Image 1 (cartoon, rainbow, N blue to C red):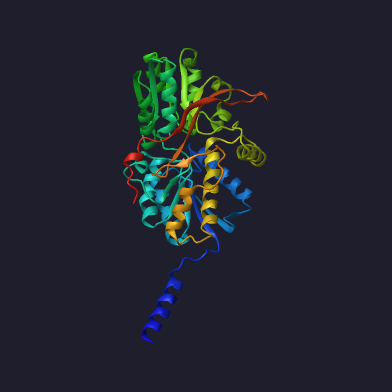
Image 2 (image 1 turned 180 degrees about the vertical axis):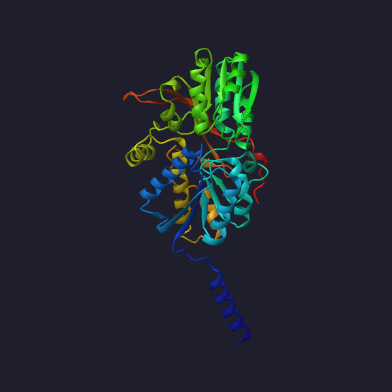
Length: 389
């Protein structure tokens, strides 16, 4: 009789501790929605919202509640918003951060709370390597990757003297490292700017003095817009070829700068002219919804929402079963707008990277055109350092 009571008690305990399906999915969307970097956060948000519209406002069949906050590109603001998401709102997922320094600032609190962060942009080397974490997934890339692709192309084309320009923050430092990992020619000058800087008179004077064959720059958002405008206005484009990762040469920058960007080369893992059904729908509907071509940031926001949807669906909404959610995220059972990719052991993508050139399309618009593949199934350089717990 005593044993029977114990078995009944054990069964009751199992029922109370078993994972239950949530009645809705709460997502904390934290991004840069004001200041020089706002265009990037807005594109991620718009791509995310378009995916949610395609999903009829649900993740995995459950109603979605998306709580949006502007980090203002300030670590302390990002930390405050994150604390609210985790303690007051009790979100199931977080996403949206643009800049790596902000991701590094909020990461510890997010991971300690056992909340999954699906990055739609920031991909710091720290979280790809020794600080990799069970609760961090990146649907975009590792910071170095697009820069590596440009470095390889510049190397293959025989440019012998290149000036490198990037902002002085973790993403900028990763950019320099990534480019030089595959470019073995002469780097005549490495120029670090302030994050958010908009006047480049001093840097352009340095470039003119060096007389390089090419300039590689990574200046996201309004920084890149101003740099290209000032570079061309200074007459430097007549003798020096500009190269950039897609971050500094995508549709947001092209829309603001226009014709001066013609002939500029850049790298990306995605392009609006990719020929697959998911991408065609995404590009067409994004233009209808927002009246502009999507950028790579928008494509990443879209994919982040699809990954969350797949994880909720595959776990049947049992979001308190963290191990099951992790396995569902790792499985990546959704069709990306960039085509196929898979997660490496560090939860960063293994995927293709492409060369693009800015020209005019059939409609006369200044835009990117995909030229070819630089890397196929490319993994980041830090995955071997990741010992996932």
